Image (cartoon, rainbow, N blue to C red; front, side, top):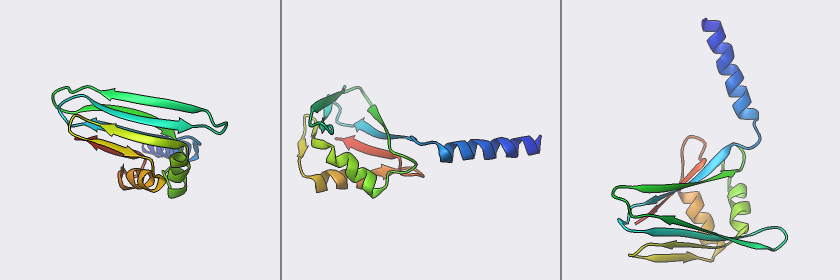
Amino acid sequence: MRCFRLILFVFILAYYLTSCDVPGQIKLVNQSGSTAYYKYIVVDESGQTDTVDIELLGIKGENTATLFLGFGHRWYENQIMDYVNSIERIELRTVNDTTVLNDKKKMYDLFQDHRKGVFKRTVKIKLK
């Protein structure tokens, strides 16, 4: 039985490490007590823009939303930069504050500085 568990563990670990698109996530946490918004505009390779506008309701306690992305085993600096280069603008809005990021360096710093977890696959952004 012990040998079976070891083989199963090795198999799962090998499968995990060889998979090509490990899900990463941007976790948005609304701590403002009222409705908050996370909006970003993405430009694809052909130059077409797409706007994603996420509304986080002001439910008592924490209200969260999660965006799932695929970027390999870790979110390395060059992968963050590739993602940031596809974004034209990020807007974070609450009743208390509005932050608009147009600068690629500031966007990069936002994602780089808020990485969490063992493999740095989660970016946690708190809206207050």
